[in-house]
Image (tube, rainbow, N blue to C red; front, side, top):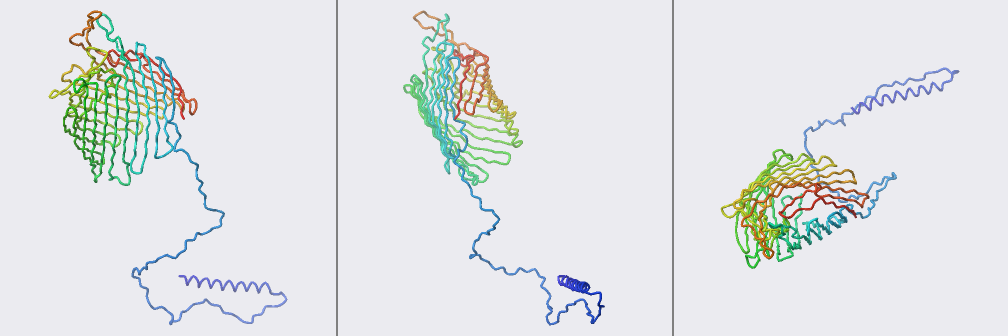
Length: 578
């Protein structure tokens, strides 16, 4: 085909050349001289004929064979850049100046005053300039004085914290000091109206604590790597009198993935000593320590997760007990990300701590009997899920068989102080039925709502009532971002009615103390509703104004018998961010 194309092209070229000569001769002829023809050139198409001697008489090989491919090497090729002179050149990368990883907005100082002689001072700072290091501290002071005589409250907090992220693990630490002071301002009276608490002694608690944790970092490139953590918690807690508690707890966690299974272990040892609260044992000293080991194995499918194990608990110290409880849990995704069903069975020993008791009720007496609570068997189940980022929920139902459940009761001799009584012992166990519900709603970027419901029902073995324990508790929160400068928060709290032991005191004369009745009567503590709200306005980027109101309905209520809460109180002040 190529040869034919070249032949045709040559024929057209010869014809064009002859025509060009003809036009040229015509242009140069003179009219006075006639044209004469001397000769004729006969032109015909060129037909190339190849001699037989140079013809190729071998047919081509049409078989598909791969010829040998030699291994090439390029060792001596010079690396040269093609230089194109177009006015372009390599861009120079300019180093950016050092900047902080984020704007420091968490540092602040706050000061406020309010009615009931309220004074608030608070400060928080943190160094966040480094990606792998963060440290800071905080300090807080709050004091109030109610309308009742010696109805005083004072709280101080100070602490420092830090976090260091290392290539293999992360280290966290916190050390602090808390102080809380109040008075035994409850005023029970006898049958003549005479106060049974004329001195209204002061009470204060000091808490020095430390917490440190080491946690392995998750490596997404190696999901089968061993994950671990170790934690140390220690505190020294005491009141104004002789009560003091020292505790050192060490806990650890290990987990290893083996194919589709996870094999792990949780272990903890809590060495605890209490003095000045139990005069029956060892001159008021009690060694109440607990150790537990929880081995488990879990496996996870596409829409389910199952964990099986055991909880081995040993109590040691002044008394010893050894228990082995089952531990199993299942989580099933009925509708992925929207509806999850979960349930399980377990058991445990809950250590009774003087610190935890005093933080719940600071009006404790000096001679407390301390014993731990045993969850012999606990069943639970429920449903949880979410609908995107705007709605989340959880509902849980529980049934427990308990031994040694503590309740607060007013002391018979000094009713402005509280003792502990326990329900469930040996074959007579306490039956507990509970409901928990939680919901979070994000209506928009401007409105966030949340709520929590608790229902606690006890079937008691020896006690008449679950003293000072309401059946129903409801808490709701709301946050409104009115604008970039104005924020409003609200919180509502509802407690159902509860019961207290009440004694009748007969006045025996001016020099004789009032004599309590031989038996108590059941006093009903009414339920209450407490509404609080606050607002903050950012006048500038750093300076803000805040106000907060508590007990907005000025409800007269009491959580513990003889101890009414503050009425309507409001506090306002300035907030400075730096």
